[in-house]
Length: 132
Image 1 (tube, rainbow, N blue to C red):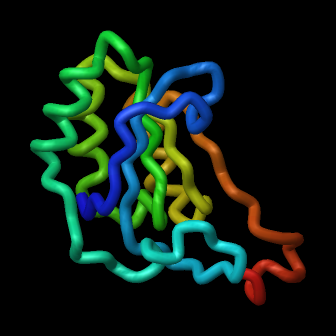
Image 2 (cartoon, one colour; image 1 turned 45 degrees about the vertical axis):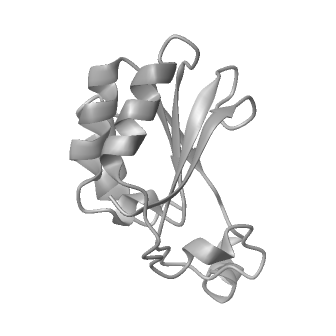
């Protein structure tokens, strides 16, 4: 995973849950209102997965789950493996996505690797291409 940010505790990113937040890059959209512009292009300033797993394990009695956001997390080739490791820790997973990779989302759901999906709809269908 190309992990570019980590927030150890969040009270707002996973509804009714306390979560850690993992930020990935890149994103396949370039929305003019993006609040994570440093994650649009692939960001090579990464955080090692082992650090993330250790941090989550240490907090597993405090947090309910993990929010994985971006950029666009479904562009990560090893997202299934990464989510399996989080599940081994015993945490819920929320995926923030733009919905561009429905087959990845469907596979994560089918394999019980995601507990909550939040899809950001960028604009009306007629204006989507211009916006994203």
